[in-house]
Amino acid sequence: MAGYHVVLVHFPIALWMTATLAILWRALSDGALAKAIDRALVPLLVVGLISGLAAYAVGLMVWPWETISSTPLGRNHVLLATWTVAYWTLLLATRWIQGEAVWDGVMRWVMAGLAILGSALLGITGTLGGHLVGIYTEVSEALRFFGWEVYTTFYVPTLTLAAIGAATVLLIGLGIWGRAPQRSAG
Ligand code: HEM
Picture (cartoon, rainbow, N blue to C red):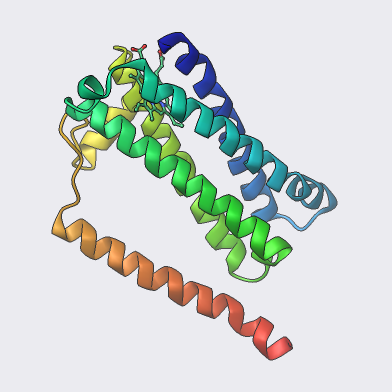
């Protein structure tokens, strides 16, 4: 199964990285090309999600659960993979439900921020997968620099929880601010 997982992970990685570029392009431009790219975004995110779920499901079959869940690195890889898939599901739902309104006002910058965060999670998931097979990159050095040693189980310290709480309030505030012009216009 390891071979299948390695082959399969390339699809969500390529598709979600392409989606990140598409979102950044549309956030920065209202041109005809950016709008055409945006029309392909929902199908792109749907195919990305299907391939991500397939990579995830096959990932569960590579090693016995007792094995992958008994090492910090294994647990971290599964945790980050779960976040990544959940995160891109949310981005797909947002664009699908809200339609082109996601590019109105400040919402486009929220989309750009979410896309950057989503590709960071994807990158960390891939990095940890690499560590599982003995391929190391500078990404784990960067994570160490920010205080997370990837060979120790990731946990959320109180300060981080506070930062997440602050970010949540900030994002809700941005959302309310982003809706305000629509309300007065409508
Ligand atoms: C979309 C989610 C996932 C992505 C993007 C991803 C990515 C990766 C990558 C890039 C590698 C390194 C492959 C290589 O270079 O040989 C890897 C390895 C691995 N992943 Fe994942 N992974 C995902 C989900 C999962 C899940 C959910 C599990 C298990 C519950 C898992 C278990 C493993 C294992 C056991 C390896 C080592 C494979 C080996 O021994 O050859 N992965 N993953």
